Length: 325
Image (cartoon, rainbow, N blue to C red; front, side, top):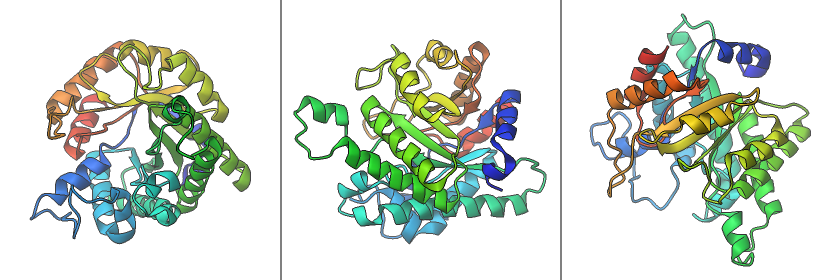
């Protein structure tokens, strides 16, 4: 049942009572299982060295993506994110597959929606069905960097906004409950993404809840140099459900920044990485260590939506849920 049928007010009421659990790294699971020969998720003709984005699996190996969603749902996730982080024309152009972007975004949403429906038949005890968040990454291109280099790329803010608008429409058509704008590192990218989302809402005549999550340094800045206050001000364009932080190490202290994000009447989210990656891009924190770090943080600052990003797995999410809910 999409959140539009449940009503946003019911979602807000649920968030005010206890944290909702977001899933962990979708790409982490897909990449990890691709290297394991006896895995039920063995990725056919796909490897970590593949020149194509993992999002394409939503078209060509939907069973693999559904497996990941199912594992996170069984681990206790209240919100699962679609395998669509890069599914926009600009990011896909880098791989030479830009014409597939909308198809992939829609397919990714459909797989997640079907996974939730199947899970609800499997687990009839849940009174509140898991939600599907349409993952929207920042794209492979930085408007701030391009502006500093004299706009040499040919990608304009309008081009990027159009790309995000089309991704939003495809995700909504595929059945998402929430749009998740995540891993924001450039505030200009975020601004045009929200413009694209706003135009998508006007086109369909309704709005979905929007979660926005940035990659902040412990000192409180995005890679583009913008502050938490800048982030909050730009977010007002879509009246977001939540503001948060993701793709940072759980071992850093983000208590102060999360307090700043929660100063208004918005909910907050935090889905960090399992520590700092080593030279082989492996993340060191085991589920117990990850959950313990999260619990320590939650004692200092309330967070409404918690989960994991790079290096986290269903085991991390399961233990996080057991220790916090």
